[in-house]
Amino acid sequence: MNFKDNNKSVFENDQTVVRYAKSNSSIGLWKSEEHILSKYFINKDFKLLDVGCGTGRTTFALVEKGYNDIIGVDISKNMIDTAKYLSENYETKPIFEVADASNLRYEDNTFHYALFSFNGWPGIPNESSRIKSLNEIYRVLKPEGIFIFSTILRNDENYIKPSSDVIQKCTEFNIEKYGDHIFLNEDNLCDFMHLYTYDELIEILHQTNFKIIEIIDRDKNFIESFKVKEFANNTHFIILKK
Image (cartoon, rainbow, N blue to C red; front, side, top):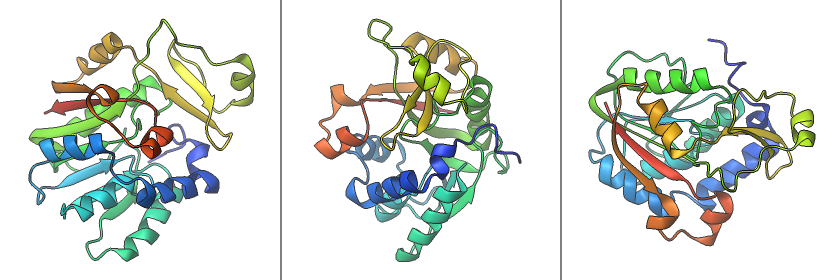
């Protein structure tokens, strides 16, 4: 598989990887994540795919909560190598593999649950691959399987398009459509996220066979810690069923 088109250099950067690794212990699961996952990922013996797992923030937190059949995948080799190293501290070790969410190696109907946390799905830098990843996750889920992901929704009243300076600096990414957001992250490195409106997101989901179960606005429903809010802006959790 060729990961080049969907991988982002920011996630191979050592400084970014270290920051993500520190979040494993300093942040762990957000209150919102903990509530939503416990509500929908009921059986801890079921097979779970943690997509875009990074250095394992959600993966290890789920292991600590008793989930015992988890595979974590990420497109970044540096992230996965770090997660494998950190897994040596755990008696129950999740499997970590480098993988592109839009081209998964797993057979149909393999997993009961799938998670794509921390706005990882809209961070895929082209729309065709974002749609392919939804269809791939649908394919590898068992019937009635649950998929949960998060995404920041765009409000056109206050949306600010990427500046020309950032676009000129961040030549790794192309703007395909309105809502493609190129920005400099906390480490002053180029990053990408597509910001959908609510209606645009629903339209994308209707291009798949998923059933929409629930959409949850994090900050309207949960009081997160200062650390979590500093780590991640408000987001929406999308709960889908195969």
